[in-house]
Length: 187
Image 1: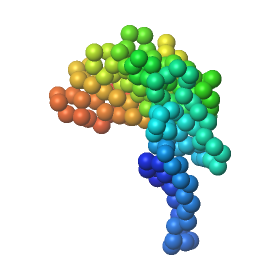
Image 2 (image 1 turned 120 degrees about the vertical axis):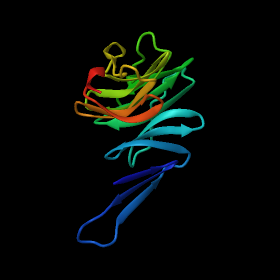
Image 3 (image 1 turned 90 degrees about the vertical axis):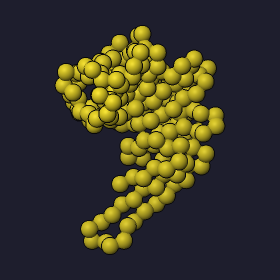
């Protein structure tokens, strides 16, 4: 079980045979940790805001693309990281461990986009087309699939796993826990 707090990652391991928890702590001072996959941790430095990848115990790798105003990394899985890069406005982003691997996932016509989650070859998050629309990608901006339910005021994908996506949709003024399987119709 992993617990992440601003600037500190603490890994906690328990055993049925032991009544006490075994734990180790790694301080990531001056950083916000956002996602973890094994020993890979993503987040950003808090000033300046630059996306980072730690493969503990090594020093962080900078994911921040040259010329960007800010960048944030929110999740990592099997060597892929996702988040957002702010050029003139926030745009969904994907990396494979380095600044040079940056991929712009921003869907054509969107006013803003963010990738919150990654699992396998699927990235999940949202894009703004007048309203916020939940969606998924498969590695390119052109692969965007709009999951926004009919009649919803807004929606967002918070996590992905296999063929499923989870998040929220605001319908009739109420935020509803939501599950999709790759299409808006599956909501």
